[in-house]
Length: 268
Image 1 (cartoon, rainbow, N blue to C red):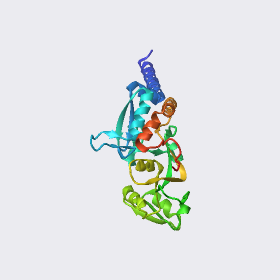
Image 2 (cartoon, rainbow, N blue to C red):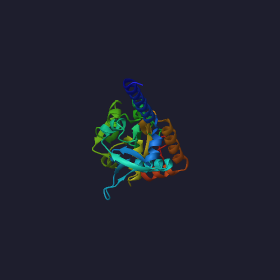
Image 3 (cartoon, helix red, strand yellow):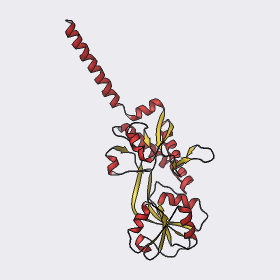
Image 4 (tube, rainbow, N blue to C red):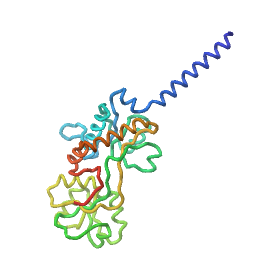
């Protein structure tokens, strides 16, 4: 065999070896990677209470989604490693493989599904009214509030939603404490927020208020991850479903919201 032929064959063998390694690397499912390292890498904002935030006393990351992530990791037989990052770049970080999943109230949308796969939903929400406990009027939609005063947070999506209905006297506030106080004292007729936060707000107030009717479409929240990982998707979905079946998810949900947020919001 000539030196030239040997050199050519050597290059071909090397190319095939590199190609084989590359294919093998791309074929590795995320589940295998996570199991091998023993850690599920989770991203969240870390400043979004009660979903995920740093405890002001201990400085430790805590919240509903921290607890949910730990439940899921336990079902997968691994531990959690958390990364906090701003919402503006959190999906880009997932695309760059900086972490395995995001737990940060990421809505499952057709646009996001073009870039990522999603778990089954773990929370379900919609806009929801808050009313006084002694309220006798039956508010089932925003149209029922025409000619009445509705309180909500300034600059929120709910402000746009309410102002799209002519005739509602929309009152905006810096935050929930202000409009909840005005509602309890009869200065407004109802308030509006996300159903998940309604549960949290009412759980942590002594004011004589209750959840009113859900308003508008249902939003489903899931866990996004890189496409092309069918084994991980099946294991992740099973882990979530197992926490729903054994009651551990409901326990965490009641702890933070006073309701089971895996169920569609209902008036109480």
